Length: 508
Ligand SMILES: [Ca+2]
Ligand SMILES: [Ca+2]
Image (cartoon, rainbow, N blue to C red):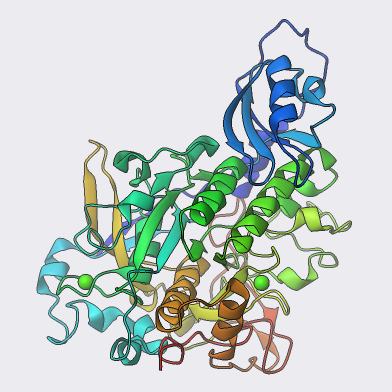
């Protein structure tokens, strides 16, 4: 196996990026051009954007995308006074998104070598690499496929780093006419634009949902459904709010019933604290999520990989990312709706924690009573050795694809772990549920997903699965926090929500 260590940008660098960008005030002379900056301009909720668009033009801004459905304009401007000059009738709020990109928590990929792929014979009645797909057995995918393996009427939007359309396990599975890049908040439907560049993350997610049953590689949970690439991760590995807004609206307006969101925007940590200036940005994202739900989309989101109690952010003094020794974490106060972790904590979104092959919460998975809705396999490379060693086969095997240095797509299969991997298991089960029971509303579907899940009990006492793995020294590298955690709740609890999603239970 080949170890592809991918550089993960620590959250600290995101904060650093934002530092120079606060000064959008009126100090510079109006005539001097500033950096080309992206703004979200919000018209009043439910209002039209024409007045706002006129104000944008007068303030020397260019509308690059107009999301009239939610009253949001994506604007670029080099006018350093744009934010103050655009304010007025028809504009509820405005904010620059500069510095508000969140790094994709990508983790590393352990690639399966070409020789291992060639030698994988598995069970001749199944896919050649099925023998390594412990996750599929755990949620009873073979039993489900005997009844229903998915309907091509179901299209799942994969809001991620793109999907390789040349991958032999995915080429037949992609709704190309519904795939798009949303980088910059502007749609681009060319195939190259929504294929991956330097990240294999989106292709891995897509394979878990819908890799083909074709005698090659692996199976997905719902190989009969279609996935659409909705690329929201830029080439630097960041998700910007304008891309997320674009992605939710694209999925909603192109007939998708489900989206998978294996990324985690934490405005509370990075952006909301003492910074009212940035709240409009998060309000725009929340408008987009609400709109998609009103159009019949169920959004599934990963809980995050910080081993963090999402239910106690306002009282817990730990920050999700490790702080340098001696630096005091700032208490989390002033929790308000603008500071929800997005999309995981937005109302109506299905939030998914992760378990490893033992069924216990993965050491990295965030949790929280009332926040986690269901759990699913995300892998746990450290559980069996209590942290002493990493076992890649205890993580999730799926499809991978990204460009090499020469710009050629390299397709293959590989192991990854994270709530990025558990989320698509829940999405795949939801896609099977919709295939077997078409016509459910997002609310009915999420209730069904929870009702059909297999309840998992809390571990007793303090949970510390990797005591032999020292906490990484800052600057934090993925995973950010390891160490003890505590599960609260009964049949429905903070680690597992309503329980493990089950593919057979939703189709039988
Ligand atoms: Ca296959
Ligand atoms: Ca939820």
